[in-house]
Amino acid sequence: MHIFYLTMQILYDEFQECCNNLIYYPGRNTARLEGIRLYQQDVRMLPQYVYLIPDAGLPGGYDHIQGQSLILAKGVPVETLAQKNAVLAVEDDVSPTTLFTKAQDIFDKYLRWDRTIHQALNSQSPLDDMLTASLDIFHNPIFIHDPNFFILACPRTVPGMSVWTKDPRSGMDIAPLSLIHDFRADLEYLHTLNTTGPSLYSAELRGYPILYINLWNEGKYEGRICVDELESPIRPGHYQTLQYLSEVILSALQNKNLYRLGMGNDLIQFFREYLDGNVQDESRVINCLSFLNWNRYDHYLCLRLEPDQPDVQLHSSAATLSYIETQIQDSYAFLHQNGITVVVNLTHSGAKAPDVLRSLAMLLREELLKMGASSQIGDFFQLPQGYQQAKTVLELGRRSHSMHWYYRFEDYLLEFLLQKGGEVFSPELLCSAKLLALRQYDRENHADLYHTLKVFLEQERNVLQTAKLLFIHRSTLFYRLERIQKIADVNLDDAKERLVLRISFYIMEYFDEAGENAQV
Image (cartoon, rainbow, N blue to C red; front, side):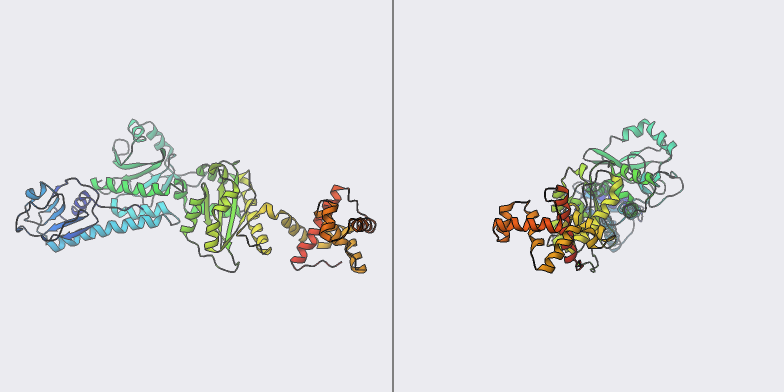
Protein backbone atom coordinates (compact mmCIF):
# COMPACT_ATOMS: atom_id res chain seq x y z
CA MET A 1 0.00 0.00 0.00
CA HIS A 2 1.25 3.47 -0.91
CA ILE A 3 1.82 6.00 1.90
CA PHE A 4 2.02 9.72 1.27
CA TYR A 5 4.88 11.58 2.91
CA LEU A 6 5.14 15.35 2.80
CA THR A 7 8.10 17.42 1.61
CA MET A 8 9.25 20.79 2.87
CA GLN A 9 8.02 22.20 -0.45
CA ILE A 10 4.43 21.19 0.37
CA LEU A 11 4.71 22.76 3.83
CA TYR A 12 6.06 25.94 2.25
CA ASP A 13 3.21 26.02 -0.29
CA GLU A 14 0.60 25.57 2.42
CA PHE A 15 2.14 28.14 4.77
CA GLN A 16 1.91 30.75 2.01
CA GLU A 17 -1.86 30.74 2.47
CA CYS A 18 -1.55 32.18 5.99
CA CYS A 19 1.89 33.84 6.20
CA ASN A 20 3.26 36.64 4.03
CA ASN A 21 6.92 36.71 5.00
CA LEU A 22 8.52 33.32 4.48
CA ILE A 23 12.07 32.28 3.80
CA TYR A 24 12.56 28.83 2.30
CA TYR A 25 15.69 26.74 1.83
CA PRO A 26 14.61 23.37 0.36
CA GLY A 27 17.72 21.36 1.14
CA ARG A 28 17.30 17.85 -0.27
CA ASN A 29 13.47 18.21 -0.14
CA THR A 30 12.85 14.45 0.05
CA ALA A 31 9.38 13.04 0.61
CA ARG A 32 9.82 11.64 4.10
CA LEU A 33 7.83 13.80 6.54
CA GLU A 34 4.95 12.29 8.48
CA GLY A 35 4.51 14.76 11.36
CA ILE A 36 5.83 17.69 13.40
CA ARG A 37 7.73 17.74 16.68
CA LEU A 38 8.82 20.55 18.99
CA TYR A 39 12.63 20.73 19.07
CA GLN A 40 14.17 19.64 22.39
CA GLN A 41 17.91 19.83 22.67
CA ASP A 42 18.35 16.61 24.63
CA VAL A 43 16.00 14.48 22.42
CA ARG A 44 17.37 12.72 19.33
CA MET A 45 15.95 14.13 16.10
CA LEU A 46 14.37 11.72 13.59
CA PRO A 47 14.33 12.26 9.80
CA GLN A 48 10.58 11.59 9.40
CA TYR A 49 9.60 14.69 11.41
CA VAL A 50 9.88 18.40 10.83
CA TYR A 51 11.01 20.19 14.00
CA LEU A 52 9.77 23.57 15.15
CA ILE A 53 12.49 25.72 16.76
CA PRO A 54 10.59 28.43 18.66
CA ASP A 55 13.44 30.40 20.25
CA ALA A 56 16.44 32.29 18.94
CA GLY A 57 18.92 31.25 21.60
CA LEU A 58 20.02 27.61 21.83
CA PRO A 59 22.62 26.62 24.44
CA GLY A 60 25.65 25.32 22.58
CA GLY A 61 24.63 26.82 19.24
CA TYR A 62 23.27 25.06 16.14
CA ASP A 63 26.16 23.00 14.77
CA HIS A 64 24.73 19.71 16.10
CA ILE A 65 21.57 20.09 13.94
CA GLN A 66 22.36 18.56 10.55
CA GLY A 67 20.28 17.05 7.75
CA GLN A 68 16.96 17.87 9.42
CA SER A 69 13.72 19.54 8.32
CA LEU A 70 13.04 22.67 10.36
CA ILE A 71 10.39 25.33 10.85
CA LEU A 72 11.85 28.45 12.44
CA ALA A 73 9.90 31.03 14.38
CA LYS A 74 10.73 34.72 13.97
CA GLY A 75 14.17 35.60 15.29
CA VAL A 76 15.83 32.22 14.87
CA PRO A 77 19.00 32.65 12.71
CA VAL A 78 18.00 31.37 9.30
CA GLU A 79 21.33 31.49 7.48
CA THR A 80 23.14 29.45 10.12
CA LEU A 81 20.61 26.60 10.10
CA ALA A 82 19.99 26.67 6.33
CA GLN A 83 23.57 25.63 5.61
CA LYS A 84 23.00 22.00 6.64
CA ASN A 85 19.20 21.63 6.84
CA ALA A 86 15.93 22.16 4.97
CA VAL A 87 14.47 25.30 6.48
CA LEU A 88 11.13 27.11 6.42
CA ALA A 89 11.45 30.38 8.35
CA VAL A 90 8.37 32.42 9.28
CA GLU A 91 9.31 36.10 9.58
CA ASP A 92 5.79 37.20 10.55
CA ASP A 93 5.06 37.86 14.20
CA VAL A 94 3.32 34.51 14.79
CA SER A 95 3.45 32.58 18.04
CA PRO A 96 5.20 29.18 18.09
CA THR A 97 1.92 27.61 19.22
CA THR A 98 0.15 28.95 16.13
CA LEU A 99 2.96 27.71 13.87
CA PHE A 100 2.86 24.26 15.43
CA THR A 101 -0.92 24.07 15.06
CA LYS A 102 -0.75 25.21 11.43
CA ALA A 103 1.85 22.57 10.59
CA GLN A 104 -0.15 19.87 12.37
CA ASP A 105 -3.27 20.87 10.44
CA ILE A 106 -1.35 20.47 7.19
CA PHE A 107 -0.22 16.97 8.10
CA ASP A 108 -3.76 16.07 9.16
CA LYS A 109 -5.16 17.39 5.88
CA TYR A 110 -2.87 15.25 3.74
CA LEU A 111 -3.38 12.21 5.96
CA ARG A 112 -7.16 12.48 5.47
CA TRP A 113 -6.63 12.89 1.73
CA ASP A 114 -4.38 9.82 1.60
CA ARG A 115 -6.89 7.67 3.48
CA THR A 116 -9.80 8.88 1.38
CA ILE A 117 -8.23 8.13 -1.99
CA HIS A 118 -7.29 4.62 -0.82
CA GLN A 119 -10.79 3.99 0.53
CA ALA A 120 -12.19 5.18 -2.81
CA LEU A 121 -10.60 2.19 -4.54
CA ASN A 122 -13.36 0.03 -3.04
CA SER A 123 -16.19 2.43 -3.80
CA GLN A 124 -18.65 2.19 -6.66
CA SER A 125 -17.20 5.32 -8.35
CA PRO A 126 -13.51 5.25 -7.38
CA LEU A 127 -12.17 7.84 -9.80
CA ASP A 128 -14.85 10.40 -9.00
CA ASP A 129 -14.33 9.88 -5.28
CA MET A 130 -10.54 10.21 -5.54
CA LEU A 131 -10.75 13.41 -7.57
CA THR A 132 -13.40 14.89 -5.29
CA ALA A 133 -11.07 14.34 -2.33
CA SER A 134 -8.26 16.00 -4.30
CA LEU A 135 -10.08 19.27 -4.98
CA ASP A 136 -8.98 20.65 -1.61
CA ILE A 137 -5.39 19.73 -2.42
CA PHE A 138 -5.05 21.37 -5.83
CA HIS A 139 -7.67 24.16 -5.45
CA ASN A 140 -8.40 23.78 -9.16
CA PRO A 141 -10.68 21.58 -11.27
CA ILE A 142 -9.21 18.15 -11.95
CA PHE A 143 -10.32 15.45 -14.38
CA ILE A 144 -9.20 12.18 -16.00
CA HIS A 145 -9.59 11.17 -19.62
CA ASP A 146 -8.75 7.94 -21.42
CA PRO A 147 -6.67 7.63 -24.64
CA ASN A 148 -9.77 8.45 -26.72
CA PHE A 149 -10.58 11.60 -24.71
CA PHE A 150 -13.56 10.04 -22.93
CA ILE A 151 -13.95 11.80 -19.58
CA LEU A 152 -13.67 9.12 -16.90
CA ALA A 153 -14.05 11.48 -13.93
CA CYS A 154 -14.62 15.20 -13.51
CA PRO A 155 -16.31 15.97 -10.18
CA ARG A 156 -16.32 19.76 -10.64
CA THR A 157 -16.36 22.21 -13.54
CA VAL A 158 -15.74 25.96 -13.47
CA PRO A 159 -16.12 28.75 -16.05
CA GLY A 160 -13.31 28.69 -18.58
CA MET A 161 -13.00 24.90 -18.72
CA SER A 162 -13.78 22.87 -21.78
CA VAL A 163 -17.44 21.99 -22.10
CA TRP A 164 -17.78 18.24 -22.60
CA THR A 165 -20.13 16.77 -25.17
CA LYS A 166 -22.17 13.60 -24.77
CA ASP A 167 -21.09 10.63 -26.87
CA PRO A 168 -24.31 9.15 -28.38
CA ARG A 169 -22.96 5.58 -28.45
CA SER A 170 -21.83 5.28 -24.84
CA GLY A 171 -23.64 8.11 -23.11
CA MET A 172 -20.28 9.21 -21.64
CA ASP A 173 -18.81 12.70 -21.63
CA ILE A 174 -16.10 13.29 -24.20
CA ALA A 175 -13.93 16.24 -25.22
CA PRO A 176 -15.41 18.20 -28.15
CA LEU A 177 -14.26 16.94 -31.53
CA SER A 178 -12.83 20.36 -32.43
CA LEU A 179 -10.66 20.33 -29.29
CA ILE A 180 -9.46 16.79 -30.02
CA HIS A 181 -8.40 17.91 -33.50
CA ASP A 182 -6.59 20.92 -32.02
CA PHE A 183 -4.67 18.72 -29.61
CA ARG A 184 -3.70 16.18 -32.24
CA ALA A 185 -2.36 18.94 -34.47
CA ASP A 186 -0.39 20.63 -31.67
CA LEU A 187 3.32 19.76 -31.54
CA GLU A 188 3.56 20.48 -27.81
CA TYR A 189 0.65 18.14 -27.09
CA LEU A 190 2.12 15.39 -29.26
CA HIS A 191 5.33 15.68 -27.23
CA THR A 192 3.35 15.28 -23.99
CA LEU A 193 2.18 11.81 -25.08
CA ASN A 194 5.67 10.45 -24.36
CA THR A 195 6.30 12.07 -20.97
CA THR A 196 6.53 10.34 -17.63
CA GLY A 197 5.98 12.09 -14.32
CA PRO A 198 4.11 15.36 -13.73
CA SER A 199 4.58 18.08 -16.36
CA LEU A 200 3.08 21.46 -17.20
CA TYR A 201 1.30 21.99 -20.49
CA SER A 202 1.60 25.63 -21.52
CA ALA A 203 -1.30 28.10 -21.80
CA GLU A 204 -0.68 28.62 -25.53
CA LEU A 205 -3.51 26.39 -26.80
CA ARG A 206 -6.05 26.48 -23.98
CA GLY A 207 -5.41 29.90 -22.48
CA TYR A 208 -4.32 28.51 -19.10
CA PRO A 209 -1.62 26.07 -17.97
CA ILE A 210 -2.51 22.45 -17.28
CA LEU A 211 -0.59 20.30 -14.82
CA TYR A 212 -0.85 16.76 -16.11
CA ILE A 213 0.54 13.26 -15.68
CA ASN A 214 0.21 10.37 -18.10
CA LEU A 215 -0.97 7.02 -16.76
CA TRP A 216 1.35 4.29 -18.02
CA ASN A 217 0.35 0.71 -17.22
CA GLU A 218 3.08 -1.78 -18.18
CA GLY A 219 4.19 0.53 -20.98
CA LYS A 220 0.66 1.15 -22.26
CA TYR A 221 -0.81 4.66 -22.27
CA GLU A 222 -4.09 4.41 -20.31
CA GLY A 223 -5.04 8.09 -20.09
CA ARG A 224 -4.16 11.28 -18.26
CA ILE A 225 -4.92 13.22 -15.08
CA CYS A 226 -5.23 16.97 -15.69
CA VAL A 227 -5.35 19.92 -13.28
CA ASP A 228 -6.53 23.16 -14.94
CA GLU A 229 -4.95 26.29 -13.49
CA LEU A 230 -8.16 28.33 -13.40
CA GLU A 231 -8.76 29.21 -9.75
CA SER A 232 -5.40 29.05 -7.99
CA PRO A 233 -1.75 29.02 -9.08
CA ILE A 234 -0.16 25.62 -9.66
CA ARG A 235 2.49 25.26 -6.96
CA PRO A 236 5.65 23.11 -6.96
CA GLY A 237 4.23 20.80 -4.26
CA HIS A 238 1.34 19.90 -6.58
CA TYR A 239 3.76 17.97 -8.76
CA GLN A 240 4.45 15.56 -5.91
CA THR A 241 0.80 15.15 -4.93
CA LEU A 242 -0.21 14.51 -8.56
CA GLN A 243 2.54 11.92 -8.89
CA TYR A 244 1.26 10.15 -5.78
CA LEU A 245 -2.37 10.27 -6.93
CA SER A 246 -1.38 8.66 -10.22
CA GLU A 247 0.44 5.86 -8.38
CA VAL A 248 -2.66 5.03 -6.36
CA ILE A 249 -4.77 4.92 -9.52
CA LEU A 250 -2.19 2.81 -11.33
CA SER A 251 -2.16 0.31 -8.48
CA ALA A 252 -5.83 -0.31 -9.20
CA LEU A 253 -5.04 -0.92 -12.85
CA GLN A 254 -3.34 -4.19 -11.97
CA ASN A 255 -6.80 -5.79 -11.68
CA LYS A 256 -9.15 -3.34 -13.37
CA ASN A 257 -8.78 -1.33 -16.52
CA LEU A 258 -9.16 2.43 -16.29
CA TYR A 259 -12.45 2.52 -18.17
CA ARG A 260 -14.08 0.23 -15.63
CA LEU A 261 -12.82 2.42 -12.79
CA GLY A 262 -14.32 5.40 -14.55
CA MET A 263 -17.67 3.84 -15.33
CA GLY A 264 -18.35 2.80 -11.73
CA ASN A 265 -22.09 2.28 -11.32
CA ASP A 266 -22.72 2.66 -15.07
CA LEU A 267 -20.91 -0.57 -15.93
CA ILE A 268 -22.54 -2.44 -13.07
CA GLN A 269 -25.95 -1.19 -14.16
CA PHE A 270 -25.28 -2.25 -17.73
CA PHE A 271 -24.39 -5.82 -16.74
CA ARG A 272 -27.39 -6.09 -14.43
CA GLU A 273 -29.77 -4.94 -17.13
CA TYR A 274 -28.07 -6.97 -19.85
CA LEU A 275 -28.04 -10.27 -17.99
CA ASP A 276 -31.65 -9.76 -16.91
CA GLY A 277 -32.60 -9.33 -20.58
CA ASN A 278 -33.43 -5.63 -20.33
CA VAL A 279 -30.91 -4.24 -22.87
CA GLN A 280 -32.48 -4.02 -26.30
CA ASP A 281 -30.03 -1.52 -27.80
CA GLU A 282 -27.31 -3.56 -29.51
CA SER A 283 -25.00 -0.52 -29.64
CA ARG A 284 -24.81 -0.47 -25.83
CA VAL A 285 -23.48 -4.02 -25.86
CA ILE A 286 -20.96 -3.31 -28.60
CA ASN A 287 -19.83 -0.16 -26.84
CA CYS A 288 -19.30 -2.02 -23.56
CA LEU A 289 -17.19 -4.61 -25.36
CA SER A 290 -15.15 -1.86 -26.97
CA PHE A 291 -14.28 -0.19 -23.71
CA LEU A 292 -13.56 -3.46 -21.94
CA ASN A 293 -11.26 -4.32 -24.83
CA TRP A 294 -13.18 -7.58 -25.28
CA ASN A 295 -14.39 -9.08 -28.55
CA ARG A 296 -17.86 -10.40 -29.27
CA TYR A 297 -16.64 -13.86 -30.24
CA ASP A 298 -14.20 -14.35 -27.39
CA HIS A 299 -14.98 -17.32 -25.13
CA TYR A 300 -16.83 -16.42 -21.94
CA LEU A 301 -17.91 -18.05 -18.70
CA CYS A 302 -20.66 -16.81 -16.40
CA LEU A 303 -20.61 -17.63 -12.69
CA ARG A 304 -23.30 -17.14 -10.08
CA LEU A 305 -22.39 -17.18 -6.35
CA GLU A 306 -25.02 -17.20 -3.62
CA PRO A 307 -25.09 -18.00 0.13
CA ASP A 308 -25.09 -21.71 0.95
CA GLN A 309 -28.52 -21.29 2.56
CA PRO A 310 -30.92 -19.57 0.14
CA ASP A 311 -32.71 -17.64 2.91
CA VAL A 312 -29.44 -16.13 4.23
CA GLN A 313 -28.71 -12.53 3.23
CA LEU A 314 -25.42 -12.07 1.39
CA HIS A 315 -22.97 -9.89 3.30
CA SER A 316 -20.25 -9.38 0.71
CA SER A 317 -17.89 -6.46 0.36
CA ALA A 318 -15.85 -4.78 -2.31
CA ALA A 319 -12.90 -6.73 -0.95
CA THR A 320 -14.63 -9.99 -1.94
CA LEU A 321 -15.23 -8.72 -5.47
CA SER A 322 -11.62 -7.56 -5.71
CA TYR A 323 -10.44 -10.98 -4.51
CA ILE A 324 -12.45 -12.69 -7.24
CA GLU A 325 -11.04 -10.39 -9.92
CA THR A 326 -7.54 -10.94 -8.56
CA GLN A 327 -7.94 -14.72 -8.72
CA ILE A 328 -9.48 -14.66 -12.19
CA GLN A 329 -7.81 -12.48 -14.78
CA ASP A 330 -10.02 -10.56 -17.21
CA SER A 331 -13.13 -11.00 -15.11
CA TYR A 332 -15.78 -8.61 -13.86
CA ALA A 333 -17.57 -9.30 -10.56
CA PHE A 334 -20.53 -7.38 -9.14
CA LEU A 335 -23.34 -7.73 -6.61
CA HIS A 336 -26.69 -8.67 -8.09
CA GLN A 337 -29.93 -9.97 -6.52
CA ASN A 338 -28.44 -11.15 -3.21
CA GLY A 339 -25.54 -12.84 -4.93
CA ILE A 340 -22.39 -12.24 -6.91
CA THR A 341 -22.27 -12.55 -10.68
CA VAL A 342 -18.92 -12.96 -12.44
CA VAL A 343 -18.28 -12.62 -16.17
CA VAL A 344 -14.98 -14.16 -17.28
CA ASN A 345 -13.25 -13.63 -20.61
CA LEU A 346 -11.49 -16.97 -21.08
CA THR A 347 -9.85 -15.88 -24.33
CA HIS A 348 -8.05 -12.90 -22.79
CA SER A 349 -7.09 -14.67 -19.58
CA GLY A 350 -5.95 -17.82 -21.37
CA ALA A 351 -7.52 -19.83 -18.53
CA LYS A 352 -9.47 -23.07 -18.76
CA ALA A 353 -12.93 -23.22 -17.22
CA PRO A 354 -12.02 -25.96 -14.66
CA ASP A 355 -9.05 -23.89 -13.46
CA VAL A 356 -11.28 -20.85 -13.04
CA LEU A 357 -13.72 -22.81 -10.89
CA ARG A 358 -11.00 -24.31 -8.72
CA SER A 359 -9.44 -20.89 -8.13
CA LEU A 360 -12.53 -19.84 -6.12
CA ALA A 361 -12.81 -23.00 -4.01
CA MET A 362 -11.27 -21.41 -0.92
CA LEU A 363 -13.50 -18.34 -1.16
CA LEU A 364 -16.62 -20.51 -1.47
CA ARG A 365 -15.72 -22.47 1.66
CA GLU A 366 -14.71 -19.47 3.76
CA GLU A 367 -17.68 -17.31 2.74
CA LEU A 368 -20.14 -20.27 2.80
CA LEU A 369 -21.14 -19.73 -0.81
CA LYS A 370 -22.33 -22.05 -3.56
CA MET A 371 -21.57 -21.40 -7.22
CA GLY A 372 -23.19 -22.27 -10.52
CA ALA A 373 -21.15 -22.14 -13.73
CA SER A 374 -22.45 -21.80 -17.28
CA SER A 375 -21.22 -23.68 -20.29
CA GLN A 376 -18.44 -22.03 -22.25
CA ILE A 377 -20.02 -19.30 -24.38
CA GLY A 378 -18.61 -18.36 -27.78
CA ASP A 379 -20.63 -15.18 -28.34
CA PHE A 380 -21.00 -12.28 -25.89
CA PHE A 381 -24.53 -11.78 -27.19
CA GLN A 382 -25.41 -15.17 -25.63
CA LEU A 383 -24.16 -14.10 -22.20
CA PRO A 384 -27.71 -13.57 -20.80
CA GLN A 385 -28.39 -17.23 -21.60
CA GLY A 386 -25.17 -18.18 -19.84
CA TYR A 387 -26.35 -16.25 -16.80
CA GLN A 388 -29.60 -18.23 -16.80
CA GLN A 389 -27.55 -21.43 -17.07
CA ALA A 390 -25.50 -20.46 -14.02
CA LYS A 391 -28.60 -19.61 -11.98
CA THR A 392 -30.40 -22.78 -13.05
CA VAL A 393 -27.53 -25.16 -12.33
CA LEU A 394 -27.05 -23.54 -8.91
CA GLU A 395 -30.66 -24.39 -8.10
CA LEU A 396 -30.34 -27.92 -9.50
CA GLY A 397 -27.10 -28.53 -7.62
CA ARG A 398 -28.67 -27.50 -4.33
CA ARG A 399 -31.65 -29.75 -4.98
CA SER A 400 -29.33 -32.69 -5.57
CA HIS A 401 -27.87 -32.27 -2.05
CA SER A 402 -24.40 -32.58 -3.56
CA MET A 403 -21.53 -31.83 -1.18
CA HIS A 404 -19.69 -29.94 -3.92
CA TRP A 405 -19.23 -26.17 -3.59
CA TYR A 406 -19.81 -25.48 -7.27
CA TYR A 407 -21.88 -27.00 -10.07
CA ARG A 408 -21.24 -26.97 -13.83
CA PHE A 409 -24.16 -26.75 -16.23
CA GLU A 410 -22.86 -29.54 -18.46
CA ASP A 411 -22.89 -31.89 -15.44
CA TYR A 412 -26.58 -31.16 -14.87
CA LEU A 413 -27.74 -31.01 -18.48
CA LEU A 414 -30.02 -34.04 -18.17
CA GLU A 415 -31.56 -32.71 -14.95
CA PHE A 416 -32.24 -29.42 -16.72
CA LEU A 417 -33.96 -31.16 -19.63
CA LEU A 418 -36.05 -33.20 -17.23
CA GLN A 419 -37.02 -30.10 -15.28
CA LYS A 420 -38.12 -28.32 -18.43
CA GLY A 421 -39.97 -31.36 -19.70
CA GLY A 422 -41.66 -31.75 -16.31
CA GLU A 423 -42.99 -28.20 -16.60
CA VAL A 424 -45.03 -29.30 -19.63
CA PHE A 425 -45.82 -32.98 -19.03
CA SER A 426 -46.28 -35.18 -15.99
CA PRO A 427 -43.41 -37.69 -15.46
CA GLU A 428 -45.30 -40.71 -16.77
CA LEU A 429 -45.97 -38.91 -20.07
CA LEU A 430 -42.24 -38.24 -20.51
CA CYS A 431 -41.29 -41.91 -20.07
CA SER A 432 -41.32 -44.83 -22.48
CA ALA A 433 -44.71 -46.53 -22.38
CA LYS A 434 -42.91 -49.86 -22.76
CA LEU A 435 -40.93 -49.28 -19.58
CA LEU A 436 -44.06 -48.26 -17.70
CA ALA A 437 -45.76 -51.48 -18.85
CA LEU A 438 -42.80 -53.50 -17.55
CA ARG A 439 -42.94 -51.72 -14.20
CA GLN A 440 -46.68 -52.41 -13.93
CA TYR A 441 -46.09 -56.12 -14.70
CA ASP A 442 -43.53 -56.32 -11.87
CA ARG A 443 -45.95 -54.81 -9.38
CA GLU A 444 -48.76 -57.16 -10.32
CA ASN A 445 -46.59 -60.31 -10.46
CA HIS A 446 -43.92 -59.54 -7.84
CA ALA A 447 -41.24 -59.88 -10.52
CA ASP A 448 -37.88 -58.09 -10.89
CA LEU A 449 -37.76 -57.51 -14.62
CA TYR A 450 -37.71 -53.70 -14.36
CA HIS A 451 -34.53 -53.72 -12.24
CA THR A 452 -32.95 -56.41 -14.40
CA LEU A 453 -33.39 -54.29 -17.53
CA LYS A 454 -31.99 -51.20 -15.78
CA VAL A 455 -28.79 -52.99 -14.73
CA PHE A 456 -28.43 -54.65 -18.14
CA LEU A 457 -28.58 -51.28 -19.92
CA GLU A 458 -26.28 -49.59 -17.39
CA GLN A 459 -23.71 -52.33 -18.06
CA GLU A 460 -23.93 -51.73 -21.81
CA ARG A 461 -25.57 -55.19 -22.31
CA ASN A 462 -22.60 -56.99 -20.77
CA VAL A 463 -24.12 -60.36 -19.78
CA LEU A 464 -21.37 -61.52 -17.42
CA GLN A 465 -21.19 -58.24 -15.50
CA THR A 466 -24.99 -57.92 -15.30
CA ALA A 467 -25.42 -61.46 -13.96
CA LYS A 468 -22.68 -60.83 -11.40
CA LEU A 469 -24.31 -57.65 -10.11
CA LEU A 470 -27.74 -59.30 -9.93
CA PHE A 471 -26.33 -62.43 -8.25
CA ILE A 472 -28.01 -64.70 -10.81
CA HIS A 473 -26.81 -67.28 -13.34
CA ARG A 474 -26.41 -66.29 -16.98
CA SER A 475 -29.20 -68.67 -18.02
CA THR A 476 -31.52 -66.89 -15.57
CA LEU A 477 -30.57 -63.55 -17.08
CA PHE A 478 -31.29 -64.81 -20.61
CA TYR A 479 -34.67 -66.05 -19.44
CA ARG A 480 -35.50 -62.67 -17.91
CA LEU A 481 -34.42 -60.81 -21.04
CA GLU A 482 -36.72 -62.98 -23.15
CA ARG A 483 -39.61 -62.23 -20.78
CA ILE A 484 -38.79 -58.48 -20.92
CA GLN A 485 -38.82 -58.44 -24.73
CA LYS A 486 -42.11 -60.35 -24.82
CA ILE A 487 -43.92 -58.33 -22.13
CA ALA A 488 -42.68 -54.85 -23.10
CA ASP A 489 -42.07 -55.44 -26.82
CA VAL A 490 -38.63 -53.83 -26.68
CA ASN A 491 -35.88 -54.21 -29.25
CA LEU A 492 -32.64 -54.16 -27.29
CA ASP A 493 -30.61 -54.15 -30.51
CA ASP A 494 -32.01 -50.71 -31.40
CA ALA A 495 -29.63 -48.01 -30.09
CA LYS A 496 -32.32 -45.30 -30.10
CA GLU A 497 -34.75 -47.46 -28.15
CA ARG A 498 -32.05 -48.28 -25.59
CA LEU A 499 -31.38 -44.51 -25.18
CA VAL A 500 -35.08 -43.80 -24.63
CA LEU A 501 -35.24 -46.55 -22.03
CA ARG A 502 -32.14 -45.23 -20.20
CA ILE A 503 -33.62 -41.72 -20.11
CA SER A 504 -36.94 -43.08 -18.92
CA PHE A 505 -35.23 -44.84 -16.02
CA TYR A 506 -33.53 -41.55 -15.15
CA ILE A 507 -36.81 -39.61 -15.33
CA MET A 508 -38.55 -41.92 -12.87
CA GLU A 509 -35.64 -41.83 -10.43
CA TYR A 510 -35.31 -38.04 -10.75
CA PHE A 511 -38.93 -37.33 -9.92
CA ASP A 512 -39.04 -40.01 -7.22
CA GLU A 513 -36.14 -38.29 -5.46
CA ALA A 514 -37.88 -34.93 -5.87
CA GLY A 515 -40.92 -36.28 -4.08
CA GLU A 516 -42.98 -36.55 -7.25
CA ASN A 517 -43.32 -40.31 -7.43
CA ALA A 518 -44.86 -41.37 -10.70
CA GLN A 519 -47.98 -43.43 -10.17
CA VAL A 520 -48.61 -46.01 -12.85
